[in-house]
Amino acid sequence: MSVSLLSDWARREPRAAVLGDDAPWRAGELVRVGVVAAVGLIGVAVAWYGASAQADWPDTLPWASLGASAVTVAMLGLVAWLMAALRQVRSLRREVMPWLETAVSTPSISSTVQTAPGADFVTAGGMTRFHQPGCPLATGKLVRPLTIEEARASALDSCGVCVP
Image 1 (cartoon, helix red, strand yellow):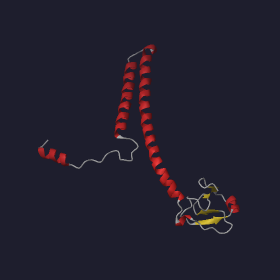
Image 2 (cartoon, helix red, strand yellow):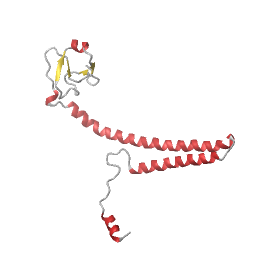
Image 3 (tube, rainbow, N blue to C red):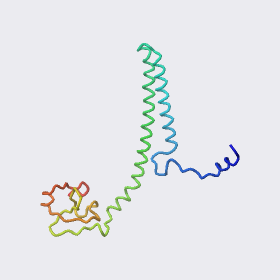
Image 4 (tube, helix red, strand yellow):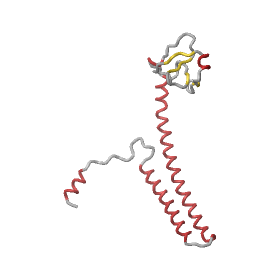
């Protein structure tokens, strides 16, 4: 390799990280999972190779036990990996939920739906459910009023959020 190629390589832009800040796993956790999974796969390969040289069932039993243990190790590593992601997602959810609750509970100008007298519910074109006038799922949509009789007679289901 020439000196100019080495200097070009040294001056190159740093590569972007494979994992972003919002990734559910840290790089160290991915390395640990990779090592544990590799150990499990190597254990399965060794057990397979050892059992293939045996002709009798009693002679293959220790190798089968090794294979089952290796699969267990690999599975525990993968479960730990998923649990780390679940912890991260729950942590992010705890951060987002208070903000989301205040954003949904704060009425905006377009969230108050004017309904006709006697109209208890609202729906909009393309909706498969009817809502209470203050429902966040109907907020900002061009809605039409429904009376309770029209809501019961229509093929619309009731909303699961505002529970009319």
